[in-house]
Structure formats: structure tokens, C-alpha cells
Image (cartoon, rainbow, N blue to C red; front, side, top):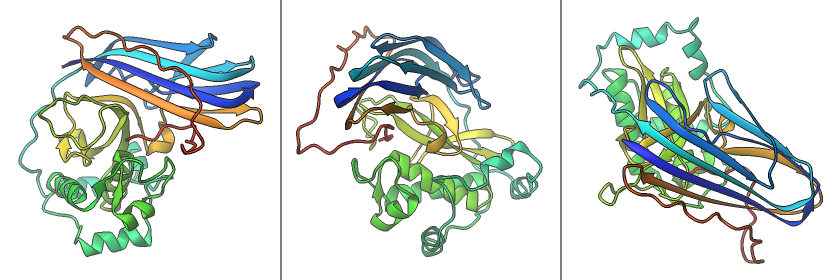
Length: 311
């Protein structure tokens, strides 16, 4: 399946800022699961854009605005082909748990260790005990059971958390967005000894799919490493396996590793962040949406953080 993506990010300031330094992770991955045929990044005001790849193969662009500005606009346009995933078996051999228990000297073990947003807590332990979350017959059936449980117990509620909410907030109020639900599942899988990593990206929404996540925002899910299968994508927000509709942008231990935008600015100013995402079928004629224009919120609108929360 081929997708055409527009991602607009607008930073508005109530007073001019003298300098802004930013890095963005907006270029879809190009690997064995998907092919990024086209990517173009535009920054207004115009500036030099540099790029590099990190250890996990994520594309990172960075730039520095050195003139006074009251707004900064970043537009990313991509065309990406996502390949079909192989059919999963009904279950894995019970000996798969032994394979996972012997990963201590393997690089995969990094994805079993706690991270900033996916780590053990008393509330997580109580949640697992209350719902009897333990190792099942095999790792594959276990992660599918956990995904179904989180779909039923955590209500998907936009704007119910902030970009840096810990999992304890989500477990207490039993609601959150895809970023939160993904962090909870990663923490649970790691507690069971299953390597898990965070995926930042997009989900292509169709009329009959009945997705809970929002169509005009970035999306998040996780990948678990399973013996004989490798990395398998799980989308607990929508209780589905990651497939051709899931466009992978960046991989990390959790959101802290892969925010779509992250930066700092110099100046005495309040900031407002506005994001618009459009994901379309690339085989259909898609007209580029008009760029989002900078605006400053009214006094009744909440100020948003510089990093984009994944809805």
C-alpha cells in the first residue's frame, strides 16, 4: 500500500524570539518493511537543513533559525510504500520463553531494560496482578492478550494527558492516547521479559476501519521481538497488528527517543504549537493542503508544549 503524507507543524510566539534550534524526526524509514520513495522538508523562514541517521536507522534533520521570528513553520511531505506483513502463526513453541530469557548478552536486551516513560512502578505491578497478566503459553499469545486487555481497560481519550505524562497517570485515570497506551504495553512486555520498542509514525484511516486513534495526528504503537518471527508490530490503541496502514517514522525505547520535533529557543516569549497531519492513498490524486498559517491562541486556549504528543 502506498501513502502520501503531509505533516505541518507551526510554532507561534507572542513576542519575537532571537534564535531557535530544532531537530525533527519526520522522514519515514526506508528499510525491509517499507520504502520511502519521496521526502521533502520545508522550513519557513528558510534556513540550511542538515541531517544524519542514528544507531537505529532513524532519519534526523536539524536546523538553526538565527533571525528574530514570531512564527516557525515546518512542512514534511512524503510518499511511502508499506509492504504486507507475513501471516503470523497461531502460536509459538513454549520454548520461546527460554530464548527470551537468554538475551542478557544480546543487543536486544536494551529493549527489555526500563526507559524514561516505560518503567516498573507499584501501580503497574498492581495493574498486572489485578488483571492476572503473566507469561502465557507462549510469547505471541501473551502479547496479543495484553493488547486486547489494554484496549478494553484504558479508554482512548484525546487531550486526557500531556506529552510527558508517566504511565502511572494513565493507569490511575484509565484513559489516555496512543502514546500512553503504547508506553503501558511496553512496560508490561518488558516486565515479562519481552524486548519491546516504541514506534512513532502514522496510521492511514479508512472509513470502515473503526480506528479509535485520530486521523489528523501522528500515531504510536510498539514492536515486540519474538523468536522465529523477529520484530512484530502491535497497535494496542486499535487492537490490531501493525500492517500496511502503519507508516513507521522512527524507532526508540520510548517517546523520549523519537519525538517528531524537539528544540529550544532564545527569548522572552510564550509558545503555541499547532500540528496538522494528512495521510492519503498515494494511488489517488491528492492535492496538497494549503500550509497551516501561524496564529496565536486566545486567552481561553491552553498553551501546548514544544514536543508533539502522539494522539
